[in-house]
Each structure stands twice: as C-alpha cells, then as structure tokens.
Image (cartoon, rainbow, N blue to C red; front, side):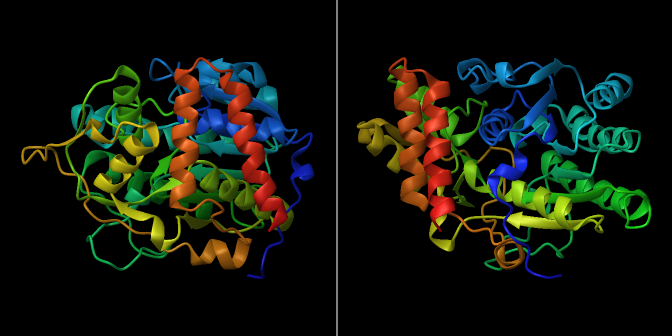
Length: 363
C-alpha cells in the first residue's frame, strides 16, 4: 500500500455523512468538526447519555439532520440510511463504559456487537455509500498488560464485557468486510479504527476520569481516584477524529479497498498514570488539594497497562498527534472552565477545533 495523501479539508464540502452516536461525546465533537469542513450530516443515536452533555450544551443537533433512535432497530436504521443516501458512514454508537458493562453485560454485547452488525447490514442496502468507518476501542485487543504496544495484526480479546464486546465487534466488522465489501463485490470500502484513551471538553460520562474530575471541581467537592496507578495513552478527542477522517479520505480516494484496521494513539510521553492526569487537572483548575487517592481492592477489573502502536497510520496516512500531553490537558481544562463560567460552548468548541486544524494545516 502506498503512502496515502492527506486530502484537503475542502474535499468534505458537500459530502453526505451519516453518523451513528452523534449525541455522545465523540459524536458531538465529530458533528462540529464535519460541519466546520462543510459536510452535510445526518445523525442517528439514542438521546444524550448524561446531563449535562455536549450535544445539548453546544447545540450540535442544529448542525445535523438528527434522528433519535436505536441502532438495534434495523427497520428504522435502514430507512434513515436510504432516505439520506450518504457517501460516508461513521459508526460511533456504542455502550462505551467498562464499569457499566459489568452492570449491564447483555445490553453491552447487544449494542456493541449486534448493533454493529445491524449497521453493516443496513449499509448493504444503500448503494450511495462508498466508505464506512467503524469505531471500536484499544481495549478490543487481548491485553496481556506488557510494555509492548499493540499492532493492528495482534489478536482480539477482552477481559471484561465491554472490552470483549469491542473485540467481537472487530471480528464481526472484519467478517463483513471480507464477505460483502471486498473489491469486486461493489463500491463500498470498510475499515475499523481503534483509539487510545480520549479526553476533551464536554465529556460527562459516569465513571470516566475527566468527567468525574470536572464534576468534582465545578461542585467544589473532593475528587476520589480509585485506580491511581493505571497507565493509559491519553490524547485529545480531536487527534483520533482527524485520524478517522484520514481513513475515510483514503477509502474514498483509493477504494474499493479490502477491510483493514487502524490504531490512533499518542506519543509515548502521553502514556501517563491516572494519578498524574488527575493532579495536573486539579492544578490547572487552581485546586491542587482537591484530589484524594483511595485505591479500591474490591473494584471490578480494569486494565492497568495498555499501549498502542500507531506507526501504520503515521506512515501510510500521514497522521500524527498535534497536541502533546500538556496541551491536551490545558485545552481540556480550559473547556470545563469556560463551561463553568457560562460561556457559549459551541463557539468555544469551534475555536478549539480551528486551533487544532491550524496546527495540522501548518505542518
């Protein structure tokens, strides 16, 4: 495979993009990013999963044709896809929380595995679609918690229900890609993408680190950290989103193409323990004493160490992170500070998008 060219952002102008999960954290950021690039967007998702939420705070529903529905409802999903006739589909809808997967394992597998299958089956019924990008997770790998970063060719797995469901979703996506979306079988190209831990303003999900920290700081409460030693590859949400755009651009430019997977993770300097992240967040807020470490030996299992090898995306797509760990934390905490101050969060979020894209275009 030759080095793919970075497609100018103007190539998204007028593109019709169908986005599942547009009411979620990543989905709302992607909606604003695609709107900034001139795309015409249709969103399909359940109602926002938290209160507050970025979808409502930034009024992103005004930027897309929005349908509140379940991806497991095959009839409604297929009808919406047919009616919109998109060029590109980003499948982002998911049950995205490890701890929630212990509370609701059946729903987690149903949404993340069969929901993905229903999306791919619906894609088969819509001839306008040329590219499909399925989002899974870095947790889809069979994680042995070694220092060796995982590559796209490493086996899928998963200790907990969430991680296992994402591994299953990868296997299902590969099966559909090889069975129904090969070159010579039509015009659709499909890829799956796996990102490391993502942070950024507007994440309010329960039991997610930055969301818990932001809630505590805004409320003036103590912030309790249950797994301070866990190491994650931290990156701003705009990093993988631009990677997903590169993947879709590659499929559109060079397709039809066989299914393949892509990792998107930060540089090694952004692989930090949870305690480091929490302490920096509190310092940036001006409340360094707000943190309490309380490791819970009875807590459900979550991976302690997980790293990604993103060299494939760097070499073949020309993608690379633009914000280091310090910049990622600064931009994230600035978002929450402006939210707490009652600022217009759509305007502020768009300014952050513009700042990131200015760096990318200058590179």
